[in-house]
Length: 207
Length: 187
Image (cartoon, rainbow over all chains, first blue to last red; front, side):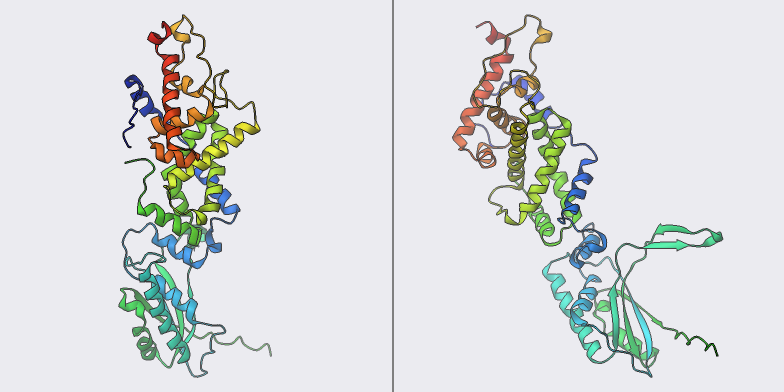
């Protein structure tokens, strides 16, 4: 605070004035009340109504580290996949590439994120043009696990690290692995799990 | 460092909120500034519920206007200006809304000192005396002597000249001394 040139404040008031700066405190529920009011006016975006850019921010914000990357594969999907996705080649098998998050994240809206988004986007476009990419989605941060152990269902928040997936068409597992190896997610420290889709046989005919 | 100074982080939070409506960004801003806004509103209205309403209205107005905020003052200065304007509206709307003392005036004319009681327990304490300052004087005293704003920041928040802030602070302090200092009483 700048010294007051006409400082004629009574010295005996100083402690009392200092104490006045500590109280009263806002009521504990006021913060959430105001947040709710802002959400009701569309100024705060919550949950599935949040724009994707904010949903990315939600998991980044508490993290103080700032480096690359799982977020960006989502951007790659967003920018690179005009729907409808190509249908799988009749002879092709389908494989799901499960992308897990890492602690290696970039700040939402940062230049680094934009660079990574372009990188993922280029990869996704390339795979789509090649007929490899069938679909892909980012998974929302919120998740719930249902457990049926002992005949009881229990709902609990999931702590899965799964951030999204790509569904690709490939002739065989080796081809799917070859596709996954080119995914920029790996270059930025992410993990890609490749699982073959077990084709569901058509239901038996009633006759 | 003046209370009105701010970090780059705060601007980043505000920009994140503007861009995405991010709730955590709002909550971080809230935690930085809500105590100040609540204290000021409470001391203007002497009513906890109304002070909370003022703080809520302040945040709604501020978040709606945030994209237009040009950062030519600190966020704290801007917010406290909104809160004081909102509290003034509340005071005007409800003429019964007064600080604790019954001779308080919402004009900027300093009232006569209250009659002194011979019983020391009946004399004004500093809190009560501040509450009895007229609106403009009280605002300046609170912002400067309690919250630590500079006269230049007060001038921005209240849309007055810094010289006005200085002169009103001097008069507010003189009034408080006259009301509170027993030595003055005998003069």
